[in-house]
Amino acid sequence: NAQQHSHYLADCRRSCFAAMAEDGFEEVWQDREIKFDQVPIMLKLRRGEFQIDSINSVEDTKGNNGERGILIVTNLRLIWTSARTSRTNLSIGYNNVSSVNIRQVNSKLRGNSQALYVMTRFNSTRFEFIFTSLVKNSPRLFTTVQAVFKSYETTKLYRDLKLRGAIIRDKELVMLPNEQVYERINGIWNLSSDQGNLGTFII
Image (tube, rainbow, N blue to C red; front, side, top):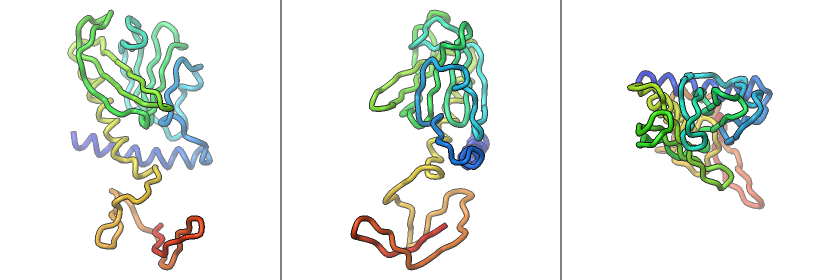
């Protein structure tokens, strides 16, 4: 609902700056990469990353059909770990996700049922992940992942570089929710090679 979405937006904004500040601007790879079968330490939440939900009895229907596991939803990625062996796992950063949909699938553990399809792209390679909840009549897998991914997508301007975007209207900066302007400096040159543009620098 709208209230939950608002909370997710606020959490994503806070976590972005917390991750950078607490780790001394260490590279944040968790939302930028897809990793398979990593050692457990790679699945440990970094500072600034927090768990939003933990869903038991989730099958990785595409890669490990017939294996029950646990799906952890954080503010940066999806982490699936097999219940049989922790070395069988997935880490899917939200920045690689292109779409999240619900479709019918044939699961070894559940039979014909609805599943969560996560379409991704990483290093010019496309990956498809299918997760099936083994708990009957539970929409939690779908609602949680879809809400968190939507929140991640709608907060990209808080953490990504954007060139020539529609951020100015009537010569004024279009402010993001909860954004504050600390200083406005006129007469600043934006230089590129031997050319430049004179404008205003807004902090």
